[in-house]
Image (cartoon, rainbow, N blue to C red; front, side):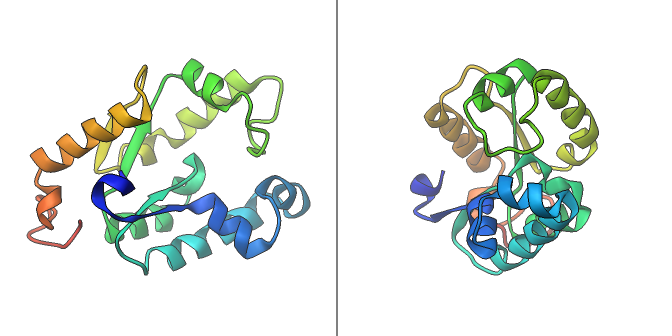
Length: 164
């Protein structure tokens, strides 16, 4: 999407790692989840001050309503959805996810999805990525943004509030 929009791409986890000068997994192990969520919230605040970017967040960023509200204020929030099994497959080789580095990964994912679903429902757009490539997902998202009026610079549901 960033390429298609001509914008920069920002990975929230990379921003956090840069700020803490270590991997999220190491920080999580040393300082705990609450401290990580504090650093994540600080990064959301910093990132949302910038414009012309697509931001990739981890799924837990929504655990703090303040993060979700700030992201929505800054732009369009898109929830990329997939089945529990697909998430297991997509994250199988990723050892940098402290909450998923357990033998019962499928059950952990089920629990996390159930816990976070109320926040995920607050996204402006929910897009099923099941069986789709990143390119196909971006093309569909582009079409949704165009059709819903997000690409003309206005949020169709917010009386002209600037979004894209």
